[in-house]
Image (cartoon, rainbow, N blue to C red):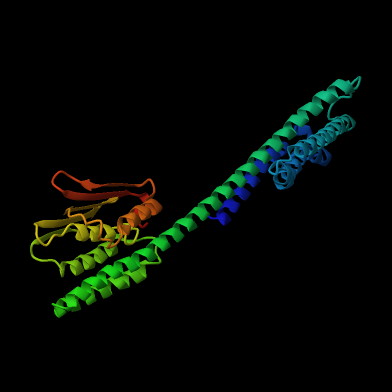
Length: 357
């Protein structure tokens, strides 16, 4: 909800509350007083004083003193104002009583009401009602402050997340391009036709990188197209002994995903799942429905030696960082090698924001 709509709702809330306060003074009027303007104005006095005290607190006392840890000043000013307003109201009530007698609305009393005790009792009643107005004003102002603070906190967190994602995307692109250019360089020396196809695939991928680098999410089908180009590019270097199984059916067009979230996993499978001397395979399975995206990648595992620093392991670290930034608390990631030396990485993303409504 934006701040403009929030202000509209608060304005409507204020109007509704004061209608509820003032309307009874206008409706519940004795029949013999309905045409008396003086009595009408006197009846409005107490709601108006409550209104004044409410906004005195809401606009000034609460933000200037209560929220600034000057509660003593806040209490003293409110007590003085409430006592003053309560006495004013009681004298007005007395004036209403005498006016009723003078106009014949009620028969004259034989003696006046006892002033001291009754005055204290009525003033206490008025103070209680006015204190309720102060209490509501304080709570409402604190609620508004909390909402503004929480909104600002969320905006800052969102900006921080977007900045971190942008940094990660910028880190990803050079890493990916370096590996891909090395692949093309290797192809040029023994198969120029494959090298040309690789350049075309790379060109298509770069277009997607440029279009997706400034977006927090892209259509899942767009992401799958990117992966298909990448896999086709990697296949050019593979021998027939490497079995590659890819299952990425066309996804629901309304499902989005963070861009380049899976490519590091695919890259990792090609990096660690291929051997020139032993049977090997890579299985890539990415499916989706209205509630989740499932990416499961399996491959034979041929760990690099400690002396091999290619990639420096930043690919999987980036996946972990980006999952935490984009889908914190809304994903599962299991990975590891089983007894048959098969490495499996499975990510399930649950997110109500997947659907591009």
